[in-house]
Amino acid sequence: MKKKLLPFFVVIILLGCSNQKQDEVPELFLPTSLPAPAITTGEHDRKIYIAAYDDTSEKFGVLTQKCIYSIEKCNGIEFLPIILKQNVISSMFWAPDGSKFATIIEENSSQEIAIIDSNGQNSKNITNTPGEIETLLGWASDSTKIIYQKDINQNSNFPSEIWIVDSDGGNSHKLLDGCCAQKSPEGRFYYLAPQNNDGLDMDIYMAETISGGAFKVVNLTNSPGTERKFSISSDGQKIAFASSQGYLFQLFLMNIDGTKKIPFEVYSANIDDITWSPDDSKIVFTSTPSHTSSSDVYVLDLKNEDLINLTNSSPYPSRSPIWSPDSSKILFVSDKDFGLSNIYVVNVDGSNLVRLTNANANLGFLSVTWQP
Image (cartoon, rainbow, N blue to C red; front, side, top):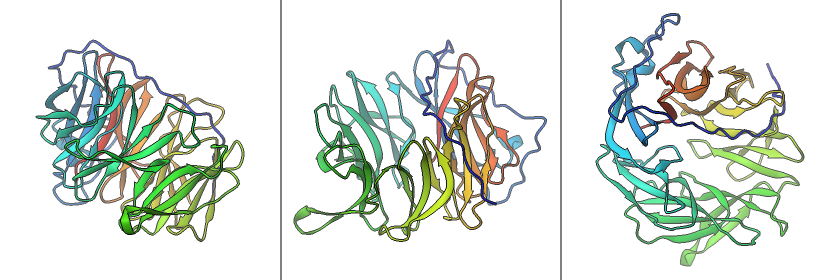
């Protein structure tokens, strides 16, 4: 059954500070009113990493994968020994080999990229660019390089640039003008850039390396409006994206080469966090109705176009959804319990909603990700 989303306003969420000591570990919330989901696959020993904050620092904690299948067997959060004195302002971006992760920190009046070992023992600022604003985009498949975005402080039709740097901080150089790049399994870059000199209407472009290190660039959407968020399917064959020709954005699907654009009856003043399920059968994203200031997490079944609101958290926002490896569950961050930021897990059909963390006035949770 097709359903429509109402338009919404863009919301910026400001996370507060607190008074918790560094050595305190939050109590794991054990729900009494919700049944523990049945274990459905394997031993579930894969690790879930959570970014948290208190009044002294940002820190990273670990839950085992079995926590999302049987909360009663979960031992709670174990914080990594590293305590970051800088402000962490992004999620953890894991290297494909699982040996380290990247994050964005605030340092030297800048937003810069830090690399941290998986055990939390070492942290290194690899960009060291005072006064510049950088955004993480992803890793190269061999875990040796990081793709990132640099905002430039000058009048330009391209207000941002796509850069690449070795994971040890060496060989940093510009690739393309544009933003929000993703790399397909075949090694092509897909990114957003304005289509004309006004610098306003953004399209999705594909850049393919040709001889001499140059790029062959193709405009895939070439629409009269503007494209926003997009996501490439895990098999590299499809792109889901949000496009607008006015105040409302609509969700679309197209082939990786820009052909066969399919619109869905999903309309909103903004669509964010678009992410394919690992089996490429569904898409999760966030949206906010215009009559409230809070976002919700939705899942769209691509086969029958059923749309489900998984969170219904108004007046509090829910955000940053990620899929479980078996595509059966979604983890997300929400302020739905008394305005405190916690990590939740829910079945893809909206059943068995469980809170995995126990935030309080002294501790909050920022994001969640899987270790490869």
